[in-house]
Length: 256
Image 1: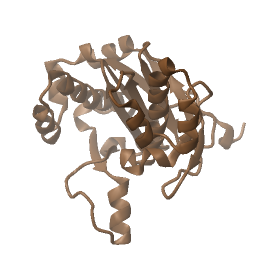
Image 2 (image 1 turned 90 degrees about the vertical axis):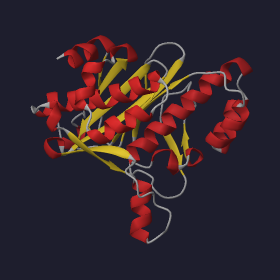
Image 3 (image 1 turned 30 degrees about the vertical axis):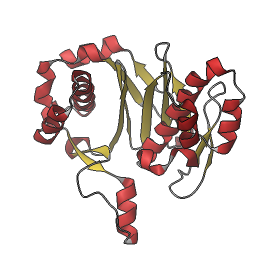
């Protein structure tokens, strides 16, 4: 087996917000703690706390260092691109994708949360992106679709029975955002620029308009409860065999 065909094995951790508790607060640094306290709703505080605590704990397990030694830098690729080209408009405040530094340098992570679920994806040496979306009956689904879907996607979506459109829409969204997060662009990269296969088909990147396109990308859906859509993206041309840990395993990891 050649190196190029050796499977990559990213890890996905699912966490239910019931695993959030005050004991995890000690894993947040001052900046993260300050941000956590600014959330108005307890559920938002719980999701943020759980995502950062899980990322530190999982990376600590992999690197063999205490969780307190795991650190992150926030990096926004859009702002970095603007700085390189001399363009104005970059946000000077810390924001963007969390990138492990210090003992965890070389690892890549992505965190997402929606409804009752938080999900972490991590891999060594390759960019990853993960997204979870709770399917909801949006008041203006047609308007959201116009903002989110490329023309070919919109045509396929409008051809669906009306009762199937909400779930399909969030399936498109999860796949697109996972890819955008893997590149480091996030939603600022523009959802309509990214085209993926319909949610009823095997997940695959179809087209990418404009700059920032990954050279290669592996994409798959992740299983979650009914009423949720989720996707994982890895920027590689190698086979990918993810390990997915259920909420029970994650709760045990967080308990130490």
